[in-house]
Image (cartoon, rainbow, N blue to C red; front, side):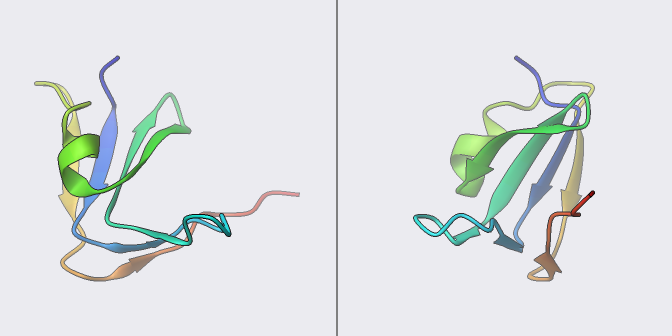
Length: 65
């Protein structure tokens, strides 16, 4: 499975008590498909994947009611 978007080198808040922070996330069709360290998440990239380097900035998932 190839991700549409990968965010790397960030401080990603996961809201998961077992794994509260991650370095990278992969998104496909608007849904998170992987959260973890950059090496594992980058494995889901392909030629059409947009990769955004967060340069240490924080990313927090949006909450929709």
